[in-house]
Length: 583
Ligand code: ADP
Image 1 (spheres, rainbow, N blue to C red):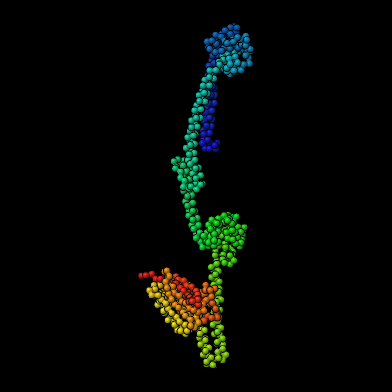
Image 2 (tube, rainbow, N blue to C red):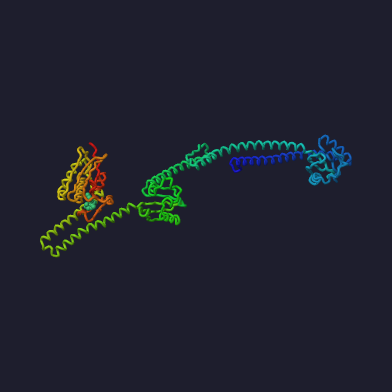
């Protein structure tokens, strides 16, 4: 309370008023009293001189005993007390007291002073009269010699009374001035502190997050200046907070939609934030992870080790971690934050898988190339070793060399085709296609092979089958591949059936045979490159036909799958194509 501006201003005003009024009153009282006393002294000195003059003849002529009567008479006339004293201090006459009863006045200060300086005065409290008295004395000269002293005394009660009145007036004035000073102080302090109070309130509100505070500036002085500065500060602060909020929102949006997983933990490894990718990666619910420790959330010690090392050293840590026993490969980067750390996880599972596929592909392709090349080598060496001279054998070997070369050429062209389709280089010429026509054409192309294999092939296309949206060349190629496989894997006397139908927005096309069939465990894999059920009975295939078929069908937005064949025998390959929109 004593620290408040209001109190300080009030106290300052009060002290100022009291000091000024106090000083003034002391000065005034002294001056008035001194002036009054000086006047009285002069007046009394001239009266004393008159008494001295009047008593001179008495001393001169030796009538000292009559001096008491003189003193009484003159005292009555002047209305003051008159004392006539002999040079030795003996009181000879007094207007109010009996001189006989009075002691020697030789040592009275006014008498001593009068005798030495010509005029003497002193103020003393008179016990007899009960008040301060002013005494003025002058010497009585007879023939150039001091014969005695004439003294006039006057009560100072009157002067003291008038000084008392002045004092009372000053005290009353001081009290009024003090009250006025307090009122003025209150007014000044209120005018000064009101905007400050507002400032304080608004600062508090700002501290609680209400940043749009504005003070109505009415004063132009320092407080007004302060209020203006406050308004500028709050506006700037609002802008900055807005900017930071939008930056934070942007960052949050980026983090939450990032493909990489992000987990932020505090210094005690407690999870503060988990983005969507991390929720999906560790199968978490939003609330489920909050407040849990990192290890509880990721359930992997290797990941936790990377984080702990980062928290311990305060340095960025990286690692490659295999979680769920090899199902997932993660690259983890833990970056220290002011308090805690940010853990970034990149899922490398797909990359790893692609890497494996690439490696397998190279292994497969070298294996696939080795077989025909070894055959070619053996055939040519046998020819070089003399078989070339036997024209029958030579012709047979050359035919086989030709067949191997054809196989190699087919494999190279199929591989090229597959990689072109996979990389999206092949653009499909999409148009409305009568799928029945394409089926007939593919069947025609394979007819010679069907007949050679002692098989029957029937084509069933329902009347009024809608057209499909497709590239007819590519779809014919798919059908040729499927039919070719069916002829290869169906023994003599078998049946191949090519049929079509509708299902929802798609057309279903299937090639079924009564051949050797495909074991259930191989069904999901036969569309992979180079995958062959039984390497010994591929019929010279490359293992790429179905991979190409799958890519072509999927590029059309369709699906392809294999299942059991007709009457529980052989296999059926079915694919879908989207029905063309009616023009
Ligand atoms: P390939 O050139 O070896 O025929 P594909 O990719 O066309 O290559 O076929 C892959 C494998 O799928 C074949 O080697 C074969 O084991 C199996 N397969 C394909 N079609 C049939 C079918 N109609 N009947 C039985 N097995 C088949």
